[in-house]
Length: 386
Image (cartoon, rainbow, N blue to C red; front, side, top):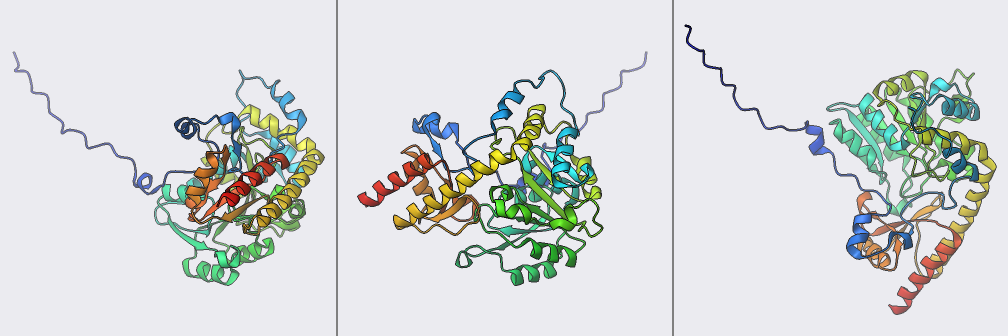
């Protein structure tokens, strides 16, 4: 009888670790109500006036809720969001092949990183701005350079400084939010197009998530008529435009956005997209919301007037809101975290600017006039007590 062979002992497995990009990726922090924080403070979420988010406070168009009630929940959504993309294409006068629907602009930002970035890829970001550009880039182990606009310039981008940095680093991807979050600064889109033509090997990702808030901006996009016209032969292939359908259309809970770009770039992004990333409810709501353009224009006009009144009220209290092209704006307060905490105790939530690298500021998103009046009254009480 053969002697039983000893089983070969394998060495113990090495410690399980994620790839390096995970350690380089900061934790995300965004506005909105944090239920855990409210529980700790003994506050009721239903009583909080949330000025920390940048959304249409008048909510979605009246027909959207009715459409959602009829969406079959036992069927998979269209993975290509075909009806929505065709509706957008008709509105924008582009081919559906130049549009990609996504689970909010944030997913589209991450798809850009997955598609175009890798270890050592150079990325330029115009800041201070939305943190997801840097987070997604860091996950892919890219090298990130941020060109900071200065408070002394009302956070407007200096074209000469930006062009110098472009020439120096020759980045693979540039992320630029226009109008910018959190500063509300708006950069002439013709300038962006000039840069894109000068650097054809760089993908310029222009995040126009807040473009829809300003009616006069609706004819001023980074692409202009030449790119958006389906028959144009003068398109800029290295421009990618990102737009939200959740902020100005009041659909933040559903998460919906889209990208416009060359058919080639859109095709590449589609390869990196998770299946069924846009759920059936979001697709149906987006299609229905597009039918209510006049309704949304009316609510956004009311919001812009509410912002004018709010800024005037803050100025009368001795505050100095930073000029902004959109209904949200920065407010210098000295200590943003302390200011936020004091207002939260009074059931008012604003956005601490620390995550933007602006710890002396808070960001305020305009709400309905009666809510804005409450904010001004509370700040007036504080000022009077001081």
